Length: 422
Image 1 (cartoon, helix red, strand yellow):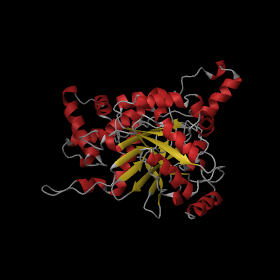
Image 2: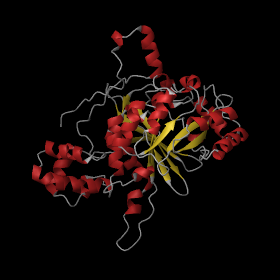
Image 3: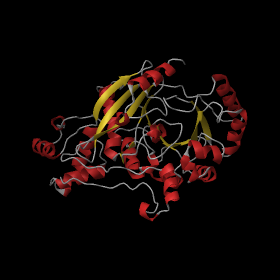
Image 4: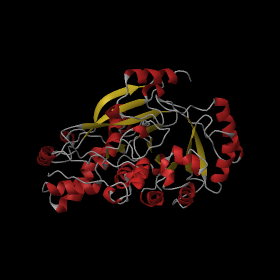
């Protein structure tokens, strides 16, 4: 198949040559532009494709139109129910078709460059993806977080990140490119490979299948999902398909820093649970912590949240609030936060700041976090404090930063020392 070269334009701003230098500098402080484009390999993988994309792939190799719907359904089952990693395993297809598929395609997942396992059971995979230039590859990170009642997979949507949030380690990385739908779904498929989830679900007739380890997906890895909207939408619709990976949309959470134009659109076209990275109760402070706020200020963001399709007490928005010592953690901030989200079915997720070398912020004292949480709880909102997971392997919230911009050994040792003080 010929290689395709879709170009991902992330913003609707004027071309750089037409912008005032001061405006250009302001725009760059809010949003980065991609450095590269995705280039499909000569033999692309079918793993991660939607039904429509599978049908197009079969058409490209000459499968008759009258057969495509049936063949797509068969391949879909092997990909997303059985977890096939080789065309020979697809025994419901003819040998001739399997051979033809193998000539043009693979079932490859993203390559694992490294795997780390935390003392708390959290797993982080460094995944290697193709680049545009000179055979160079790029790395993203995917994290699995086991808990007693669920297993959550934290998935990346970009190589790097569009945004420049000042407290986030991932935000210090360049934006290289958006991930494709297949690369996003591929993270889920790969996690099920590594955890043996396909075998756990394939119980013999008459017996109860074992509980799958990957039960929840959160788009909270590297990148801003709503600046890669179409790919994230198509990928999550594959993940939620009841005849395949079958992860309920109630168990899929899409996190955004506040790309207002795409919030309602996400509710209409994806229908996942929404999490909003809030982190401040005034525009002045949020402009510093989340520079995107200069483009979409709090009033516009909260109005989009109020209009999120399907919003109800059963489908609450999660507001994420990182606890920064002496910055946003006063009891006055807690009371202002309650006023800010009034009328929105919500819970407020308090996140102890995860330190990283070079950061100017510190985590709030635990006693202060508890006082902050109590004010929110007494106002009628659930206010869980997110337990830091995987700090010792740089897998905690805000710490993801791939080996594309590797930390030095000294930085990793410093981070590990900080993590071990909790």
